[in-house]
Length: 111
Image (tube, rainbow, N blue to C red; front, side, top):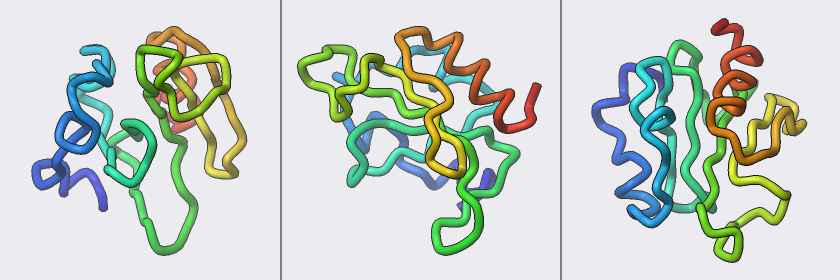
C-alpha cells in the first residue's frame, strides 16, 4: 500500500470503531496516511509520502493510537500514543498527540 491507495482504505473508524476517538489532529492531518487494520489492536498512521510495503522492505515509523480508556488499551505501556521506528524500537510513548506527531514526522524525515 502507498499513499495512492488512501481512497480505497477503510480507515480507523471502519476498522476499530468510533470508541477509539482518534483526535482530529491525527486523523485529519493531510500528511498522514491511515493504515489501520482490524487485525491490529488499535488505529495506526504513517507519513503519507513514505511507501508501506507489507511483504518486504523496511517498515516506516508508525503512530499507534490506542483506546482513550486506559482499561481498554491493547498495549499497557503507559501512554495512549506510541511511535515505533522501522526496527520496532519505541520512539515515543505518552499521552500527547502533538508530541507523538512531532516524533513521527521527525523520524520519518518529514520535518
